[in-house]
Image 1: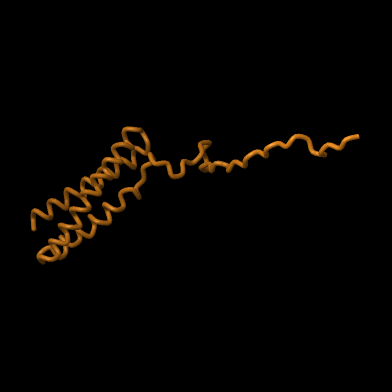
Image 2: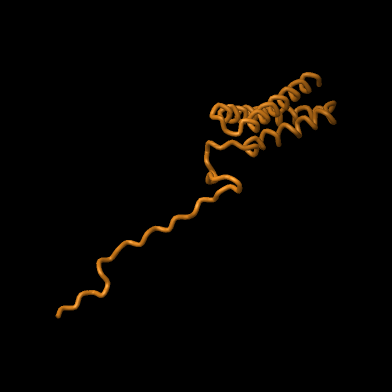
Length: 122
């Protein structure tokens, strides 16, 4: 009798699949890190730049250094706000997180408007 291997043909083991995380109360898997998702953290850079610029103009606007610092911070903040508004409009058109997108658009537009008004006043 000839001996064959005790094990039959070798089979590939199935790959392990990581279970998807499911949000509590929903049957849909959570979309982690999707590039088309929009959140308030996307606009944090604009708010971080606009808030100190507005504060400088409000409390120290009569000083030249404060005015020019606010101009630089505010200009960068307006550029970041323009990118944030574009992302919010894109999210709004796709129908994702509509309330957050509208809130973000209003918040950034009002902040930019207030900055321009304060710069013109000073």
